[in-house]
Image (tube, rainbow, N blue to C red):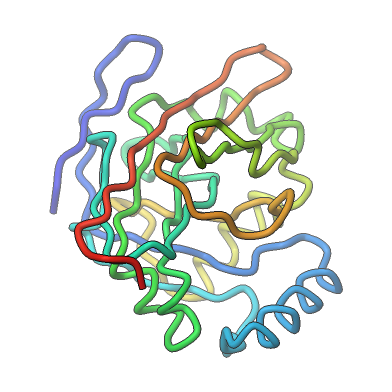
Length: 223
């Protein structure tokens, strides 16, 4: 079990986390999700055994230090809606950073070898639940000296919160003490590999946003 300090409106909230999960293929449009899986298969990425797909992740992958080490040059992040289950349910933004080369061999391993950065700032579920679909996920990637837009969509692209919780319960995930990277939004122009990754979760109703970024440090030659 690790303790993390979250920031809620300037208040430090300690939370003990013992389980980490990523949920893949959480697209709300099931036909488009299946089409995407077929496209990935053509790229050599194995089909999941179920849709959505649940991936338990090592606890030591959690990262809030603003940088991460990777092996090789073909890894990339994806902005995710992140659920943190403590005394209350908190919402923030994180990145399911993945080794895209290893993904063609084993999806779970491709996730395990990369850290999972997430923001310190959080909102309470009660702050946003009544306008959940209006929340917006976006990201930018730093490539060749400039920031390039990478993702931008509201949460209508992801299965609803209630369906996420139902899925976790069906898969016997213990919510208390868990952090769940619960879904991403489409890429604007395919995978890109850069030196930095910036992600944000925006609430257009309150006009607030949570933003964080991290540097991607290659500790071995490109693969």
